[in-house]
Length: 116
Length: 119
Image (tube, rainbow over all chains, first blue to last red; front, side, top):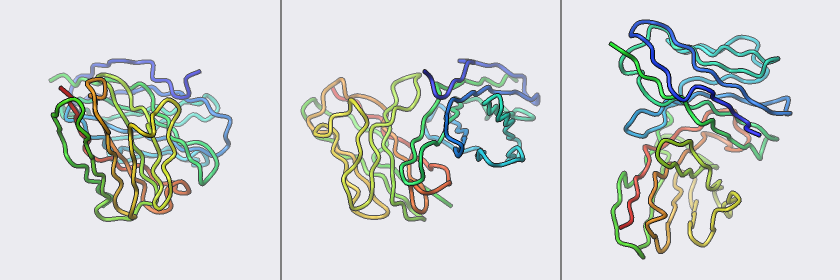
């Protein structure tokens, strides 16, 4: 079974509009972490935002926010006021396992294209 | 802060050559670094977890003798692809976590990746 599921292989959004990229996860751990990374065509992985499983508030970082719904096991990324430079591949990732033996699992990614 | 440098960014070499890729944490110490492989249009596949001063932990299906990992200091891990063949051509990317690696809540910080092409 997939531990991290990103159901949208590709998304389009008009410049200046908001977009939501979906991510659901599967874990039996009580303590875990959720991350979003951006990978432009040049290949580097850029950390965007982090949500801990015990964090009660949704994480926000500038134009990025994470819509964390623990009961539904979803951690969707919301990008507000999209810019052309946001066009990239976006990966959702989860850290699970006991402290000292953390494992990181990545989803299959969503390719976002921002239209002018 | 939290910059990871990966070198070289691109390698093209003949079949049978061994290739070494370096991953350095520039402004922090990292007890744990990770090595990933990424095929075109696919996700990252974890190859191994590199721990400073001890043997790397390889994921199932990854050949230890093919992909040699050395993590000799708190700021440097190397991946050597030994006797590379065309099927080893891929994008290899490393990451490091500040602080006590596997005990840390901090995110992984990635290098820019190495595009390896074996002719």
